[in-house]
Image: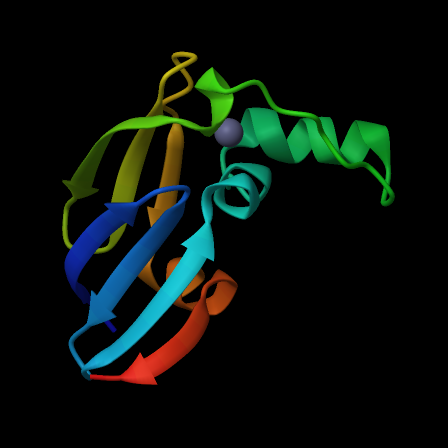
Length: 100
Ligand SMILES: [Zn+2]
């Protein structure tokens, strides 16, 4: 599955997929589910009930760049830019909201 359109609306990311489905994920969840090694380690260290409190910068996306044809690399305003969100992962963590 490949996203054909990526749109930021307020504090949510909307993805249109090549099967014509549209899904969305709130930025707070997107940040919380960042797949990079640093964030995964942080979650491991903090344990299961960990709910991070984010600053506004940590929840603001300044750039989304496709990485090859398998992932999106997201740069957050606090400088965090090592998260590569694979398309399958994005599809999994976002909620399908409609057939287009
Ligand atoms: Zn991360």
